[in-house]
Image 1 (cartoon, one colour):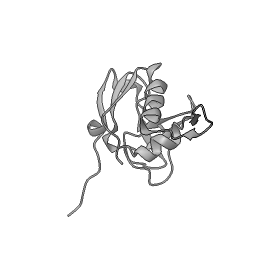
Image 2 (tube, helix red, strand yellow):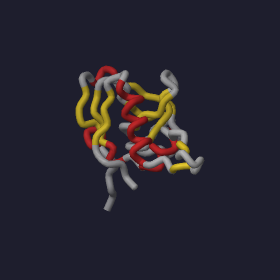
Image 3 (tube, one colour):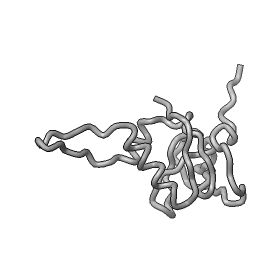
Length: 120
């Protein structure tokens, strides 16, 4: 039995216009829901489609993205926040909340909102 991949609507909850979707270069084998470089901003965005012929589709403007298919490890790597030290100089770990907050902030200027809980 063949298992089909994700549909764009599984990841893209809402968008103002599909006209602003674009294709960007992606590494071979990248799957929908993973993060991909968006060179015009120097940021990572969620791929809406699996890689095909070296590209994936993204929606860089005015949309709501479901993070249920995005690995938390990718969000942490892409939106690493510098660790803080407490008053005694001990480095405090940077948690998932900080990385998610950085992801949300990166999307704010472009109307991109993120919902849901990322994959472990």
